[in-house]
Amino acid sequence: MNYKTLKSYYFLIIFLLSMVVTAQSNLIDLVNTFSADKRALNTFYNNKESEEYYQRFTTLYKIWDEKIEAIDFENLTQQEKVDYLLLKNLIAKESYFLNIDYKAFKEVAYVADFTKEIYPFLIERRRGKKPKAQALGTILHKASKTLEKQIKESNEKPFENWLMAEKASKVIKSFNKALKEAYSFYYGYDPDFTWWVEKPYENLSSKLKEYADSLKDNYSKSSIKDDGSGIVGRPIGREALIESLNFEYIPYTPEDMIKTAKKQFDWCKEEMIKASKELGYGTNWKAALEHVKDTYVPVGEQPQVITDLYNQSVDFIEERDLITFPEMAKETWGMIMMTPERQKVNPFFTGGWEISISYPTQDMSEDDKMMSMRGNNPNFSRATVQHELLPGHNLQFFMNARNKSYRKTFDTPFWMEGWALYWEINLWNKEFPKTPEQKLGMLFWRIHRCARIVFSLKYHLGEMTPQECIDMLVDEVGHEYANAEAEVRRSFATSYTPPLYQMAYMTGGLQFYALRNEMLAKGWTEKQFHDRVLKENMMPIELLRSLLQDLPLNKNYKTNWKFSTEFK
Image (cartoon, rainbow, N blue to C red; front, side, top):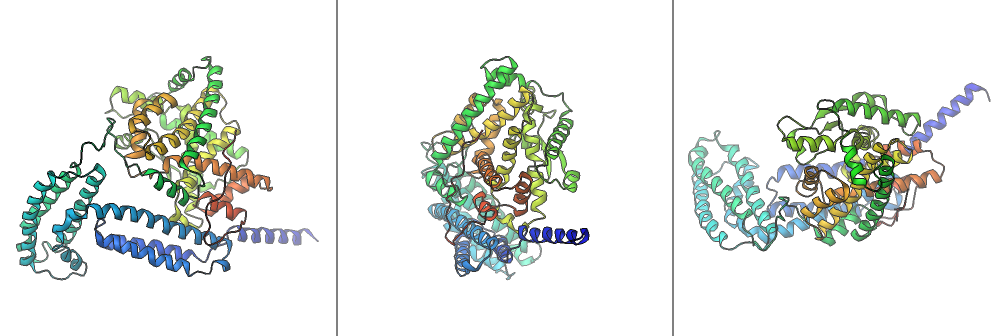
């Protein structure tokens, strides 16, 4: 066989292999239709805290359950079987949490009983029906009078707990928002409507705001809302935690994961003591950590530090040929400075399409400036620049936009954050940190991820308060107090992080690490594994494993992969 023929065969084999790796699923349109259905209903039914909304979404999930059940699972390809399970799991997950919210709604829905005569106006507005303006004005005026009486009576009957009070407040706020939308549609365009409805609407809208505010604070004071930290979250309880873990294909209990985190925590602490001894601080790792915090750069120089750390990690990875970095990905990552407002809930930089740098601004107090600078020193940042950029979140975003992008529907922090954390583990094992300061910097973040599992799960189990979580981060991890406070606030008091988000970093990293070892044992190279992961897009790691290893699946597949939790 001559060279030309051999070359042709070679490229044919490469082409066929690439077709296998990037095989597409015929369920793409089904996944996209489900996402489109949700978007359409969320746009149309704009009162999110109403019987109408909950009923409509309950019906949506029932219809989609039936659609999924009607699919002939056995005749699907492996890619399609995975998409089937992903979609079925997502529907079950969203339906489960909708039912929890619906139950909470029904417990307090009576606070909006006075709106029943108004609701037809909201529904008819969707099709532009001309309202009977004078009659509507009378209805709104009557509702205001009823509401005045209801505000006084409700103050004498506090809710059992602050969760019920907050839900009741949301019911009224949601109605007021929907009413404003309907009113704005006609106001100024329909003279009759504007004449009769303007004043009654303004009065009612003002009363609704007052009512929502009073409901939010009207709960039994024996129901603890704030432990003194000023941070208020929503513990979901053990049952919901276990269900959430099942939806993420994690076959462990919260208690199992806490034990695993503590083992990892102990390993990190041993390594920190080793690095501390190298620096001459003996077993006093906290003193060594304080030394590392003082390696911060002067004001104004942090952006250059980020660029330098990025170049170091990319060069290190490319020299070892561990993953493919597309040239455009290296060309187009961006950099912005984080606003002071965001730094209150995120004291460290974040990433994605761009890296957002958290560093002091001139309006901060001197103490806060120093905590920010010390907490973002170059040695701490060594583990997180590559986490946020390449090969972490920036590369994930880049590849997700170009490979099986429909799977963004199955977004999970165990894939997104787990992948970035996995690279911290991998680079540590390859001796990316050289000096004891660099080692302590990377270990600080690793022990932090372990602590996240412990404090977030214990909080949702009702075993730790926000203040106790802050104290743990300060005393056992070595955080500056303001940074620890911001971390806990981000974990529990914002919509940014769902209940399992904080445990997803280390847990997802352990999953990726275990899967990597399995694939290397089958003869794969690290580069093959890393490149393939990013071509499959987001999903629970156990289902990614079934794709990479072509494992048997059934339509009622449940999590069963006991991924390794012991590693060095």
